[in-house]
Length: 238
Ligand SMILES: O=C(O)c1cc(=O)[nH]c(=O)n1[C@@H]1O[C@H](COP(=O)(O)O)[C@@H](O)[C@H]1O
Image 1 (cartoon, rainbow, N blue to C red):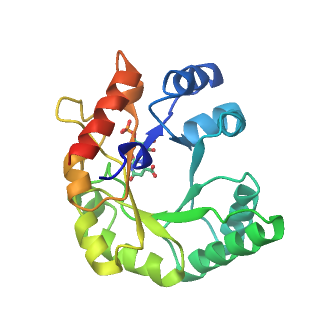
Image 2 (image 1 turned 90 degrees about the horizontal axis):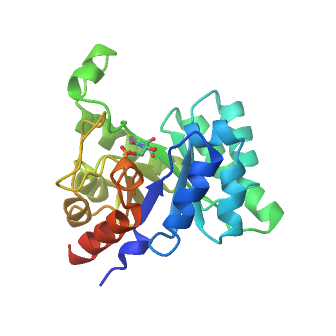
């Protein structure tokens, strides 16, 4: 049986260090992997990353780099020095992604630390087919996510962020060794909010997702620990 705790990543999207700390402490026993995203990182200048290190937790640094190749490479080198477990870039041009993959390897070897995994965001889970059409893209969300996942794989990065709605097709196209990280996870009773391509924890696992990212259904719950524990159980039962 898979261990639910090894699959669940909790997104601590708050703009205060004290709130993040309180959440991490509350979830100490039920959660091993935490995601520090833009809101939290920019608000606290990375302080939460240090706190998670102190607590011995795995860190997913979600800053979604997207820029010219030289800037992406330098940002990846700096993030490697933070000794995180996983980090995000956007799936972009081949040169940019290749340089990120290589930079992570070189920098980790130089520091003699384990190389962080780099995953590329394919199509944000808050986007619909209409949103893509509005920005001039003539592929639907699934077609674009698969296309970008194949490019990401070719570039040498470790995996992608995608909706669990298309994860099975990505696993089929890129193989099961290529990591899939799926946000937009909503237990049946949760509010969808700004997410558009949502899937329940059980369905995401059945479709082949390697990791599930859950934010508000846990962090805004009356009892975050209970909510995390129930999602872990749902993952294991799936
Ligand atoms: O890269 C991400 O983590 C990400 C990609 C994506 O396509 N969709 C997405 O929601 N996320 C992140 O996953 C988390 C989802 O949070 P909730 O919608 O509150 O569960 C947020 O921190 C988002 O920034």
